Image 1 (cartoon, helix red, strand yellow):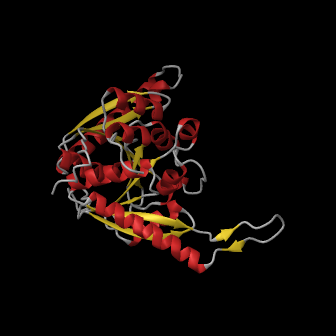
Image 2 (image 1 turned 30 degrees about the vertical axis):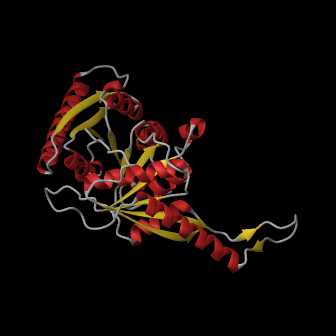
Image 3 (image 1 turned 90 degrees about the vertical axis):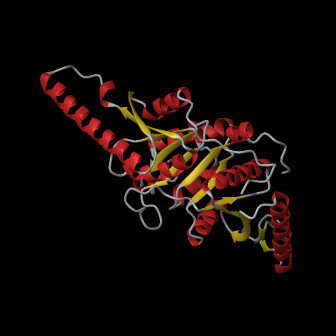
Length: 323
């Protein structure tokens, strides 16, 4: 089945998996292969060696230690490469030396024409209210291409041995803005290559409180007004689905206090395999946060999240889609 004529095809020729070679980071391999295999993309396992950049005085003991580390690194990278091969993804290995892994990954990926970056998100940072982990955060903030973020404890059963992940259900959201429409187009184009279904979610945000006069308590919106909002946006979702004209798409309206929280709940309850979300952050805001909703989704989701930079969407889906 082909996507609607208004949706351009999507290409992924080069997938870059950033790994520190820990057992946790290697859990991302079947999820990376799940993207690479349907597109016939090559995979690069990219590791940044921070030890080489340390300003230390050479000694025989230090040299022996660094040689042991290098040998362990070579073995783990080769094991990871062979694992990807069993998943059906052809892979190569690159090792960089840098004291700033995030910046080194971004620079290398740009020079190598990467189409997708894959990073692992660890639970150790769950108590952080702003940042998600230094290297992963830096990659997500600075990437000019989509970033697939895999949580350490992915929801659902682990993939079978030697089997890449199949992405069969994608959840994405809309606020009826131009960026979210482009994000939906990207999700549909991706679904066509992955043979997946897309659930489009619009979140009607609470609270139903209306500020009153200074010093007075807020007022609740009447139920009739809330019902009118719901009916209006359900109709808008229906019109958007009809306009796109694809049976890959279903739509739902949810009521919630926070878009990111409600979207991740929808993905969890609907047994989604992937969340696709545009990053709206621009300028200094993007440098700091890369988009508040995208950040919240990445922090809370227990399924992989594909973050689509706004500039990337504008380049690859430049057609004048209705907002």
